[in-house]
Length: 199
Image 1 (cartoon, rainbow, N blue to C red):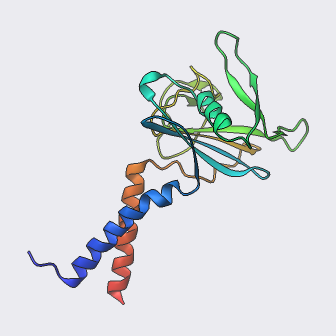
Image 2: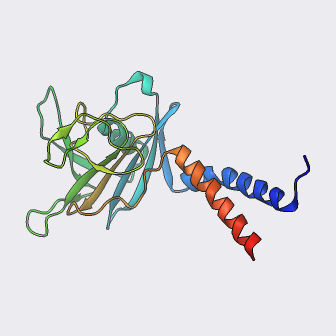
Image 3: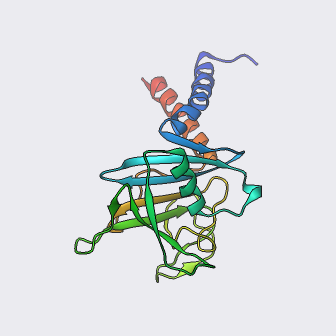
């Protein structure tokens, strides 16, 4: 089968988009840990900026929670410090982040705290502020209910974020699973090709 010039351009555009995907998706990530599986931790505030930790581990050695992700980030990033509050018990902890790099919640209005967001894995908060042991929708953010098991369990490709706000701000980083990123990249390349063709 002989390819026309336009088909060759389309194929080149799609291949270029796929080849550039790893650089686009990992450019701003801070890689910590080691292993064959990956989950993500996003920390965001006015003082801290936006930090995305690509945490590598072996899921088969788990189960693991979001506190595990945070501990890996603390070990891998010497510029990061944090303190935690246990709202559970010593035997069944339910950790929440009290402060990150000295930035702690307010004790008077406007109320701010480290708001937990989740995508994928298990555990999120229902609209009535109760714990849900189910799966938060991959690719979109749901409100978390604490960063420790059994309230939060990570899975390969899951995302956790902590945003210093009044609870109304979603993380600025989108928790897009890799297959979706590949599709978006390919569609973007196709769009560029079609725009050139229509000129």
